[in-house]
Length: 272
Ligand code: AMP
Ligand code: MG
Image (cartoon, rainbow, N blue to C red; front, side, top):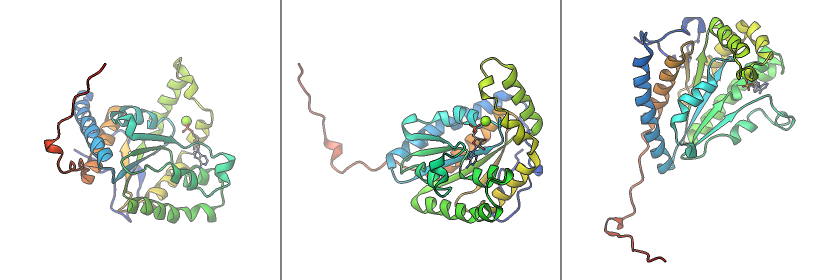
């Protein structure tokens, strides 16, 4: 049993139709973990080929409400990659300098160069999400950003960057459990931010903003996926599947050896 994670381009995302607690009929964590492990091993091999080929790059964009598991996904799924070939960028409230530029300025600089995997923990989508919900910019300004985003992602794609965007879909009930755990667990309190409660109160507004962003920016060159995130083990499985499939479609290969190498023998060095 599966739940589609994406929709054909042009169709409207209605998030109420995606079940955040969906677990593919797998009741047992163990079954999911075996497949996840297999996917993570495949990711490491695919990444090694991506790096060696040095032609394409992969950008994974993670967006979600607080406590939906962006950090956990980076740790448990993206952790499979060789750190040398990955760069994680977390987008926070923009600095003065960042605000003095267009909204894509800080994002473009963080795009992965050839051979690399880039992970965005939040992204340029904040500029049509929190900015919209909190009214940080006039509607006439943020509304134009859907086109700017699509053009920007097309530019990345034309350059050889495969863009895959993942919305971790958590329910408000599960978010409550996780935020409460942050308050109640020693060593986790630092993660609690009272502003998260404000965002929680505006849940419906955020979902409406997400639905429009996902719908307007679900393009053939940069599709959106909705991943059920109430169960961490299923979330990890679903994300590992999406990233594996994406890299497999890219099918990076090791470059052919230079001609003449077959006969070469490394000469000895006598030392000391
Ligand atoms: P966290 O990811 O929990 O460390 O929090 C980062 C905060 O920065 C979140 O509340 C984001 O919504 C906020 N943020 C990220 N990008 C922007 C942006 N472009 N404009 C306003 N707030 C942002
Ligand atoms: Mg937070």
